[in-house]
Amino acid sequence: MALNKVEICGVNTSKLPVLKAEEKEELFRRIKEGDEEARELYIKGNLRLVLSVIKRFSNSSENMDDLFQIGCIGLIKAIDNFDTTLNVKFSTYAVPMITGEIRRFLRDDGMVKVSRSLKENGYKISRAKEVLTTELGRDPSLLELSAMTELGTEEIVMALDANRGVESIYQPVCGSDGDELLLIDQIGDQSDVYEEPEKEAVLNKMVIRQLMDTLDETEQQIIRLRYFENKTQCEVAGILAVTQVQISRNERKILAKLRAKLEL
Image 1 (cartoon, rainbow, N blue to C red):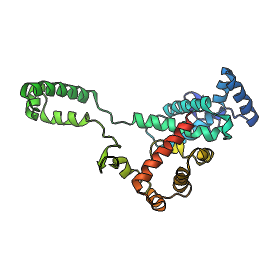
Image 2: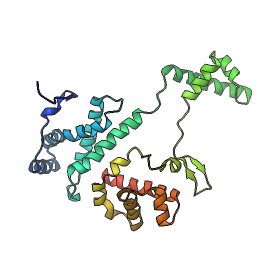
Image 3: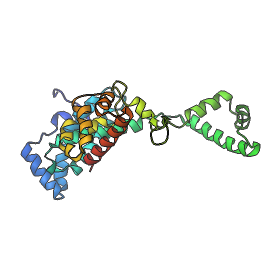
Image 4: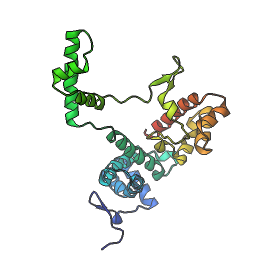
C-alpha cells in the first residue's frame, strides 16, 4: 500500500504530477496559443496548489471532495486570467484565486437554511396577510392570521422569524446623509479580528507589492500601514488625521480595486 495515499474526487494525490519551471513556461506558451491539451496538463500539474489551500479549511463541515472541486474552479480561473507580464509566480497569483473561490462557496452555502415546512408556512402566512390587510384595511393580528391559516400562533411566529430577510451589513446605524456610520464600520475593525470573506484573496503581500504602483499616494500609505506594518484602522486614522470610518471606507474601496485587478 502506498504511503500518504489520499484520494479526493477519485484522484490519488500521491501521484499528482509536479511541473518543472521550464515545463510550466512551455505549457503556458501553448495555452496562450489556444492549446487545450496544454491547458489540461497545466491544470493537472497544479492540483497540488488546490490541495494546499483546502487544508486550511479542514475544520469546515463541508465535504473535502466538494471543496477540492470548487478549488479547481479557482485554479482554472487563475490559469485563464494569469498575466505573465506581471512578473509574479503563477502560484502567488493562483492561491488567492483558489482561496477566494472556496470562501465564496462557503459564504453562499453557509446562508441560514430554512426547512421546507417553514417556507410553506411562511408563504401561506404571507398570502393570508395580503388578503386580510385588504379586507380589514390594517395589518391583521396574530390571532386573525392563525384563524385564516389554521396554524398555531407559535407556528406563525416561528415561520415569520425563519423567513425574515438577512439585514445588510451596509445598513446605516447612525449619522446624517453622506456621513452615515454603517454596520460594517462598527464590526470591521474590532481589535482587527474581523476579516471580509475575500480579504485574504486580496491581501497576499507578494501580489500587492506588484500592484502598489496602481494606487495613489494616500492609498499606498493606507495599505502599507494596515497590511505591512499591521496598524489598526484607528491607528491609521490617527496617523492620517481622519476618522476611523473614513479609513474603513477607503480600505474597502482600495481592496475592491486590487481585487478587480487580480480577477482581470
